Length: 386
Image (cartoon, rainbow, N blue to C red):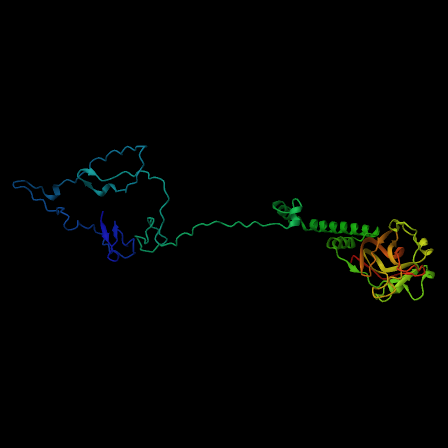
């Protein structure tokens, strides 16, 4: 087997290659089998001189050489690995009486060798240039595979609470709905709208506004309250109104004015916090109550009041201050215990009404024993749901 040395890089190339497999330089191979290198000691071929006295037959009489019969194929040992050998054609010649032909044996299974993208020749792994056409076949090194981040989509919290509202089942149902013909899809929408309309109409007939109910529950959840404005007040009965203390003074947002009513006579040792609800007839026949109109049906959640005269008024301690008041409304009442202070007092309530009557049931004692002094409310107000 001949060996060529690349004049550019000095790499050794075995075989009849036209280009260097290391640098791709052209090797200028002329197609002839080179002779033995000088100094190798191999004898040079010489002409055969016939022996003296021998008879040499003319060239036309020489018989052609007949190759010996082919050798039997070698026996393959199953225990030894099979090695592929290069195939030599039968007419390659006979050397020393032994045929140089070999038998192709099945090679061990392995990855196929890459092919040159330009000429299609098979190129050994790791060779930078094709030995047939010289094209460069340097490929970028493969990027090492690192950890792959897996992105997991997370459904909203309200979908995770509902079974079957997410995942492949939901996608399958959505695809099924989209596959329905258009008339069936329109019919489903019409039926859904009619059901919602029937439910909303039924709630409206029985006095249950669905939108208002939803808004009320939302406001309850957030604790939203708004002040009830534009209050109007009157005394019931009208004859119980005292001179100089009009009922509007209790809702005018002015602490310098106050509404007054005759203080009730409370029996000694009685607890007015457990007093029963006074009906409208009882209020009309009593010493007097403050009737407050809220303007519309409201859900009242807080009662606000300033009991007695303001702190800067010298008459405050001379008058009995309200101690227990009753908030009456259609269908019920609530008795509220107040403290003896001139500051604002807020009490939680929960009722729905359009008007409220306020009755003084009990008072704090006065500094002077003057039974003719009335009891006063400087201001009253209400907070309700929006």
